[in-house]
Length: 300
Length: 307
Image (cartoon, rainbow over all chains, first blue to last red; front, top):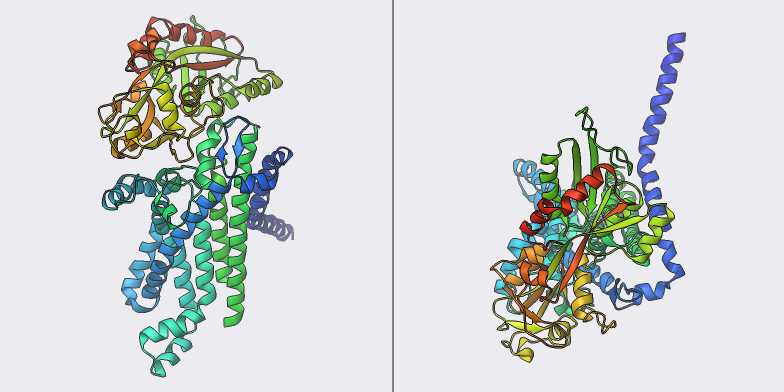
């Protein structure tokens, strides 16, 4: 009797512990959000939201401090969009190959190999971009003046987002019921037609979610863009903007946090950038999650 | 269910990577006895005290050299040195988590106020001087410039070397990021011409490098580039510009000698801050650092001794 009660108490404790671990992620996210909010709110006593978001000049230590984030927001947008333009076609092709075309033994080797890309520290990508890819492009493309520019950040980020996108796309293809694939082939469609017209539409929600998660990965990346994009706080103009130095939101925080006086306007503004990033990535991930759930319902 | 889990698993790293930059500057580890360091006990020989020191990366070479030589001479005192930036060091001093804050700029008024609110009275120690050199890519065809011309270049008024007697090459401005003490010094002394034109600022087109080495490397490989580095970072990969002072005068090449005599116009003080007048081990450390041995190491690290 005593023994049974002890077991029950033990089980109760273990259950609670597991429950707590499960909730830890949510608790952490909420705490981080509150922390960001607490440290960024004081800025709105001094500046309006419009001044911050649409201000065209970022020069935090000039005069009273100019905290226009428009160059940074556009910088992040350029680098991230560029990364997706490069990464998405590559990732789609790679995941189709891994999921449907490669022989089983090759697939068993390829998938972990692509996922291994995610294990490479971002600073290594930064070095690669700064010392190898950047100078190479600089030497071969006349229009580029400096070996640090927006598109270089996009190229490096594309490779970093690749494993995320490939991995989830591949899962999505795998989750498509075999019947769809087989019936399409049985109706006389070629393999290409089957993949593009039967498989991809069926896996659509998974693909979109994969792209969104890759987007979240790219926009939050810090070290690599800090190292390869040159960090000039200009407002990029047109397509030519991709070939010029640019500065992202994450790089700004990383570069300036160290010497921003604690509690100063500059300090709070950097936290506000962090808050914006948090909201953006949170929104992207939530949308991705909703799409995945809807897709599951469709297939079921 | 499976994909939902994947969504959640990926949610966290994405959010964390966005926020990691904000917490990327960990505070200094607290010293054994924060602020209150026992004087070294010479009789027992077993007692040790620890000095912790954190801050500017510009001051780091001096702090490292001092730490090695000083602890060799005083085995009973242990010194922990860390970088992180001037602001990080000053914050650590304010929070009482370090004994010494290294800084390549003077403390700002708001930082002094904050320290005083927390009961810390920061004491400034000028430990060395540092000259900042203007360096250019070897192909620009210019050997010397005035402070006024440099101001025009860095504020974006002049955009081609041919406008100031050089080759017909577009000027690419390379600077440090605004967290750097060097960024501030260069802005005040050169771009604003010693405060003459407070409105002037860096051109937004200026690239921002994270270190002296980064500036030098980019200037070396970029046609038409101009940047600035501390004296200790000059090498043959870039060309050093001789600078003539405000209001005219002979152009001077930056060397330890010309900074010491004051002939070279662009130099600044490097600092270590303590909470109150140093006592005990910290006092011993400063006495040694400001003495012949410490100041000789300053010169060996390509900075300019105070004496």
